[in-house]
Length: 87
Image (cartoon, rainbow, N blue to C red):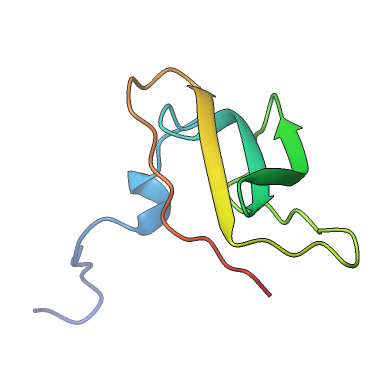
């Protein structure tokens, strides 16, 4: 390659990003924490626009099951949740 010439190695990640709201992003969902079959805490989120959400549990909430119900995306027919953490 000659000095001063430009060579494109590939597209930048920014160039590959979809503009606007990702269709597969979860828009509305609810989280339910249960202990021995009884709901001990529940939260619902609507009009979500973030990929990373943190839902703090009140002190003293313990459960043996967590259920997440996705009720809508920003247009995609399928929803995907990649990670859930309990801290």
